[in-house]
Amino acid sequence: MNFSSHALHSPVAVFDSGFGGLTVLRALRAQLPDEDFFYFADTRYFPYGERPAEFLRERCVAIAQSLQRAGAKALVIACNTASAVAAEAIRAAVSVPVIALEPGVKPAAESSRNGRIGVLATQRTLESERFQRLLGTYGQGREVFGQACTGLADAIENDGPASARVAALLDRYVTPLAALQVDTVVLGCTHYPWASAEIARRLPPETRLVDTGEAVARQLTRRLQAEHCAGGGHSRLLAGASVEPATLAEKIERLWGAPLPLIFWSPQALPEYSA
Image: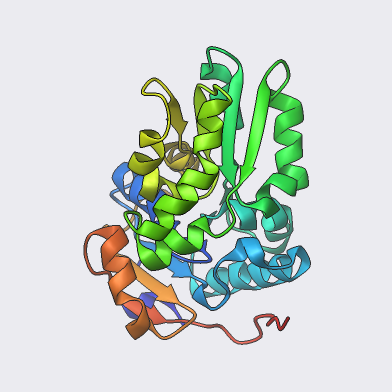
């Protein structure tokens, strides 16, 4: 694939295992209206949080290299799990700017009034060396309670944020944080902002939710300007997925609020996994 054949001008490529990263894409497009974007959902292996770290590292590096070859001028890893296990490897493998996500422990620590912070994330993210470094750097003098949310990203994507399945999982994962008297909760997975209203409903009204989408958009803006490659697009958007698009239209429209132009894209030589 070459992006120019889809009328995209050196787009910014954004990728996630599914469509949670659309929350990041929304912030990127709001701040960078003069860019074209290609969003790739690696739906063949959604959700990443349940895959082995070494496999994810190899596959994400191969995806990043394929996106660069197709003409992307920058990459945004719109997935906390992929960022946690593969960001450094991706940066070593490509020559374009790479923006990775990380749970917003820093802004949470800066804004928390009582020093008690909850982090909703995948088990893979919470166990990662990257997250432990965040705690060591910004968690000093704070009580940080990590809550692994097994199955929540899958439920949000496949059943919808307002579904009974999501409600049951939020009761299990969010309600205990209220009992711990946290005053700030980090949304450590890009799927979770889709359910932010339901999450907030289970916490005291004054609790602050921290989402990093706007911070990622600011960082991407700085990097594009520093590389003298900002702008040049026409706000065009194309999405791709690693399974046939016909199966995805309903969930995309439910999350995004409108249809997206979607193609099947599965580059050759991507690592495959079998349990």
